[in-house]
Length: 228
Image 1 (cartoon, rainbow, N blue to C red):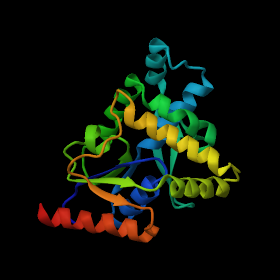
Image 2: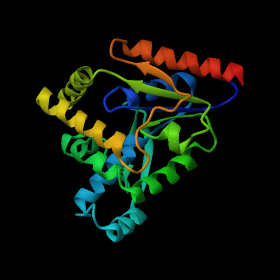
Image 3: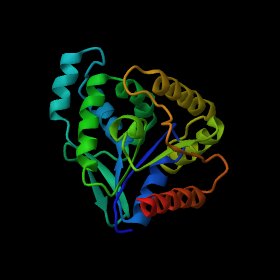
Image 4: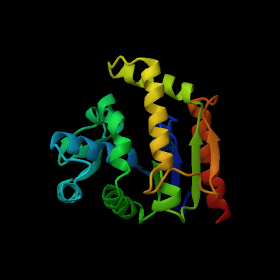
């Protein structure tokens, strides 16, 4: 496709947003921006440096020195997240980060800093960005908005499998509780809550194969470009 657009993918935790967004970007030759990894990186930094979530001054100072970048690992064929020059891709996927990330992402100062970075990254278009508020806040004028959802138990089973592949054994009920807590925080927070944009295409991944959900979004992108 010659014309480039912004594809905003929002939705609940563990719907397959990130893996789907990566595959869509690869098929279209677009850049991929993992906003969830950005919030996870901030969470990791706060934990490592004992930044209190109730200390606005400490948060503001911490955000000044947090540098998040994505680098493509040719050997592994994946994008990796770097926090202040250190590869944190594996660390930010651990459960202790998952348990805390929604509380960090709900902080206004954190969201403002991350949204500013995300808008810079997507300015030239030709990007696929996934998160909670991409279509509603970061890129309200995105040419294609996708809202992904799935049954909570199916989401938990997928997350459990993902964690197992990373050699983390976590009880399914614990994951379900974690997802419900994150859904509750994400949809009720004051700053940029998770909402389904009115003009978003809804993709329920409960009973779709990975290839089917990627194909559905690629097709929507091609139709969107053709209609421009």
